Image (tube, rainbow, N blue to C red):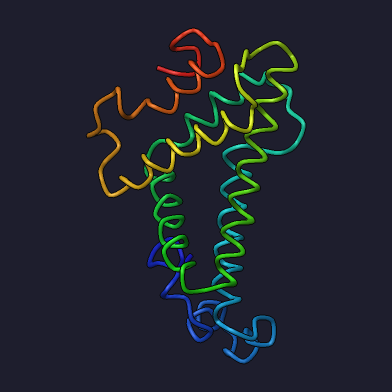
Length: 183
């Protein structure tokens, strides 16, 4: 996907048409402007990543297990790619209203999905949140964003205490024993 490999600014109607083997006019039939196409590309990638990281469907695993899996998936090269895409989208959204709306929509979706998981864990007695689960979710996402902003660095080169910040924060915020969510 062009957005992940080269950046959102490299998406053009012509490029997408070439990649799909169709004329750019056909692409413009569905996306009258490149701005709408860029917003859709970002939204599609971010939704796909959210669904892979934190599936919405009913789960048989506990909330602790699902949170641990989510945090584990946010480390490594695959997460670095989506982090770069988010950085790129947030930067470009300053100038592109369609993209700004899609970024805000995706931020709300990610926050909502994680908040739902945390609220479920509190309700089941798996977590003890001193604050509203949405506040805890936002803190976790802020730490992940901060680590993602350092996506140019190799995750293995970070000190363990930094690389595992989101894990430790989540454990403290949710009243879990250190190490429950991951090494």
